[in-house]
Amino acid sequence: MTAEVNGRVGRGQQPPPGPARPATAPRLTLRQRLSRLDTKFSPYLYVAPFFVVFAVVGLFPLVYTAYVSVFDWSLLGGKGEFVGLDNYEQVVGSPYFGRSVVNTFSIFLLSSVPQILLALVIAGLLNTELRAKTLWRMSVLLPFVVAPVAVAIIFGNLFGDKYGLVNEMLGWIGISPVQWHVDRLASHFAIATMVNWRWTGYNALILLAAMQAVPRELYESAALDGAGKVRQFVSVTIPMIRPTLIFVIVTSTIGGLQIFAEPRLFDETLARNGGSDRQFSTVTMLIYDFGWRLRDLGQASATAWLLFLIIVAVAVGNFLLTRRLSGEGGKR
Image 1: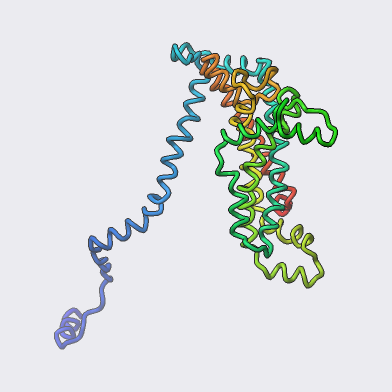
Image 2: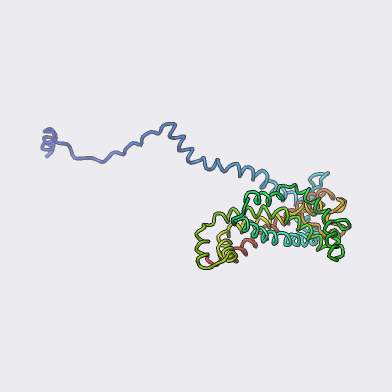
């Protein structure tokens, strides 16, 4: 049989096929390899600057502040002995911490709630067919570009106890002058007014950008169903800009709980930090007191971390509450 097979092969017939050999992949050129590396790693390089900056100016100070808060750290003497949570206990037990927290939340509620409502109304008006739209949009942003120090000085004089313009106008309608720098609630209202004046236009432009992305067909369909302008705004505009509205609420919460410049400069004399009885002293001003007046960086860092935890808790709760009220939480 072997001779027969050899004979057939010898007469020009091919031998039976053997196992297939693996095909060799073509070698990539240097240009192709660089192109693959660029496609793979370039997205990470594009976003890397943000994480580098965040690590330097955000994450490192946060971690280092936590490290300082567990030491007896003096501004002049430097690092002392390890004290653990003693700084936190002293800050919480301080008679000024509880008052500062209440003042912070009071000013925050008086500023953030009207601020968001006014921003919604202003954005809705700017989203209509107005003449000179660009002029109106620039005008609502002008208060934001004014320096906070200038705003605080101007409003501090407007709400002056003796010669303020607000008290003068109240006298025209028979209302006795208000002690804006002495009365606790009045001082909170005055500080919240300057915060609203500065930030309402900024939030209105953010909401306006979201409103302009809403499809016009939805408004036309609502108009055909007989919905008026107000009904369209409530039933079409607000649900469509829900993610942007949640963003504005969360950022306003974070900024409102970190307020410092306005109450710090509201006093006519900077000798008192938050009023004679600390009636408008905030948590950030208490951090300033511990760090620069008492020169105790350990307690100042502990106060800063307590404020950070409060902001995180309020922001998360605010976010979850907003999602539930908007209906997203129920859908899931």
